[in-house]
Structure formats: structure tokens, C-alpha cells
Length: 120
Image (tube, rainbow, N blue to C red):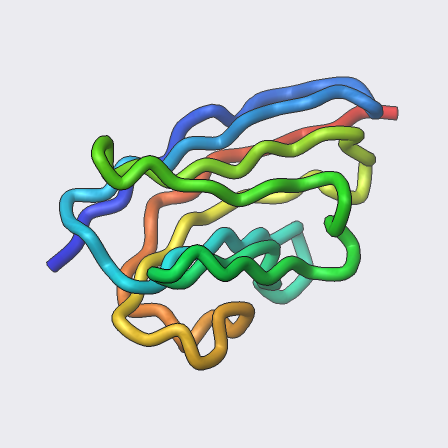
């Protein structure tokens, strides 16, 4: 079993930045960030495999950066140039396979979520 605990969400004005963190209880090969806005499906934001290969949703490319600190077993999502449409609950995810890093069913473990609200 893997426990994931997110932090770092909050409210920010458009154009601002936030950094989300996700502390993991153990290492997994694949990690990712997802988000879900009210009335919408959960969507993949970014993923990273054990080799450091990253994948991003088109909507966040150039603005968001996924990274991890293996020594601290912590995953990060740096979010810059935030837009109101980025408003959502953000979840970190961990799994043993990275065949489909942007698909929710690729992952075995989920955090509880952290809210990000971007005002215009």
C-alpha cells in the first residue's frame, strides 16, 4: 500500500503561481497529477516515469512542470501563468506501470486532493 498526501493548494489570481507537493510513503515507478473541476471528468495533467520521462496535457504545456525528489519521496507540480480554467481539485497518483500516464486507470494509489482556485 502507498499513502499519498498532497499540499500546496490555495487561491491565486490569474497569472500567478502555485507549487503542489505530494509526499509518498514509498517509491513507485510512475507518478502523476490529475485534476477534476465540478461537473467535469478527471483529467491527466502531467505524468513521470522512473526514468524521468515526462508527459503533459496540451492545456498545461509550457506552464506546468512535474518533478520529484526521490530522497524525500515527494512529487511536485509547479504551476505558473495560472488561468481561471485551471481551477479544480488536484490529485497526485502513483502506480507500478507507466504505459498510459495520462489515464486515471493507469494508477493504483491516489491522494485526497488539494483545491486550486484561480480568479480572474
